Image (cartoon, rainbow, N blue to C red; front, side, top):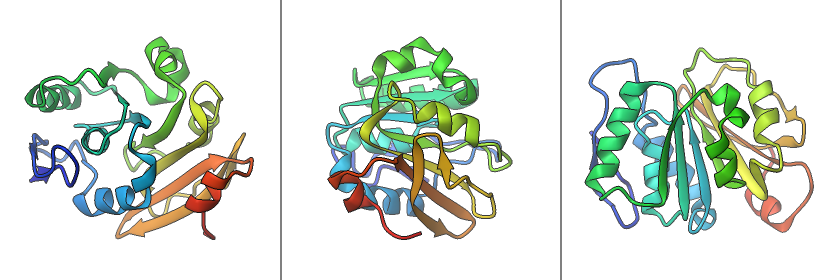
Length: 198
């Protein structure tokens, strides 16, 4: 059963998939992620890529994000996401788009809502070629100067240490799931607070 962990919608049940074709981010991983990013979520602009039923973006909304843009190319996932948002009264802070994450800069609505303070990417675990996507996401129209990109992936996937203007700042493993954090390569107080040796 999927539920919102914290914030204004704490405890609210979310409609999730009935089969195995959609893999929502587990409660354990969500709780750990938002514990790491706690100070960065309120009033943040969030892009939830390969969002599935939207567990990450919905959690961000509950915790005070200013705007969340959800993107996925599976209509079944987006249908469940829209049902969840309808139960919340269709908040104006949420935008749902159907599109391919690997062609993200070709979606005008995504660029219009950026740059983002947090970008979460959760593609199928069979996906391995992350470099082109990361280079697109690191563009100044996509990621704010103090922004963070988090990729959820299978722990054995070989992720690039650098991608254009991005570098790995942190990794966290939870069973078979790995979170890899990327931030702009320039130094800043905000980056130093979030980064640690990997």
